[in-house]
Structure formats: C-alpha cells, structure tokens
Image (tube, rainbow, N blue to C red; front, side, top):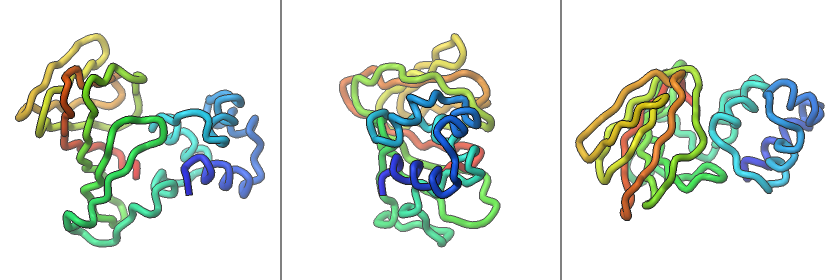
Amino acid sequence: MDIHKKIKKIRLENEMTLKELSEETGLSVSFLSQIERGDSSLAITSLKKISDAFKINMSYFFKELENQNYALSEKEQKPFKIEGSNMTHVRLAGKFPERRMEPMMVTLPPNETFIEKYSHPGEEFYYVLKGKVIFKIEEKEYFLKAGDSIHFPSEKEHQWKNPTTSESVLISVLTPVIF
C-alpha cells in the first residue's frame, strides 16, 4: 500500500478530520489533502510529524521493509524511495526493540539541487562511499568526497545535494530510529 493511502486509512481509523490532523502536525489542511490523494510529495520531516500525531512509529508506513534478524544479507537489503524524493535508501539495520540508530545506504542522483531544509531531534552521520556531496548546515557548506565523513546534531538546519554528473553513495547513521 502506498504511504499516502496508509495515512488516510489511519486517519479515518482514528476518526480524525483533516483539520484535526493539521492542528496536530502544523501542516496545512490543503497540503494534507494533497498528500492523502497522492498529489503531493511528502518529506521525511512531514511524515515524522504525521507519525507523531498518530502516536505511531514511522515504520508503520514501511512494514514491508521490516526484518526481525540482527543481520541482513545483501539480498534482504531492499532499496526504497520516499514519495517525492529522487534518493534511493537501503536499510542496513536489523530490527529489535529499543533500537536507537538508523543505518542506511543512500544514493543521490546526479545534478541534485538543495532540497527542503531539515531540522529535527537527533544526530546524523554520513560517510561518502562514492562521488561528491555538499552538505549545508545552517549557513556553512561542507564539500565531501569519497572517504570523507560528517557528523552533526540534526537540530541544526541542514540540506544536502549532489552537484556532479554521476550518482553519489553514502552510508548514513541517524538517531532517532525513523523506520
């Protein structure tokens, strides 16, 4: 099931109006309506706000990605995209209670521009496996190439982009767990 359909389903199951969801999330009624129809892309920060409003973990929207093992073989590492994003993610973590980190491999397509600015609780660590990436944290830009890494508090307003003509691949470790 698509994420936008799951959002509508859980909202109706909770007998919540779009207006009530808007008040809980700070997202506009029209934006939430567009999301539920699948007419608008959904940033991970908006999905987190919606998850929090329903008092559920974001993993609800990605059930097919869950794995109950500590180890994941390469064939179990399924790539996925978040609606409205060109980036490809691969979960690298097993599933167990009280997990605190979210390790992923992220592939950024070529010629990516800065996207929405993010700011949320937690920490982020990235290691560039291939290509180049520019991270903008608050007003400072960090140009990273293969072998470089960056670690910062997620509360700092941040963005990233791949300015090159080939894809870039990063290992990402986030807190708190989002999937």
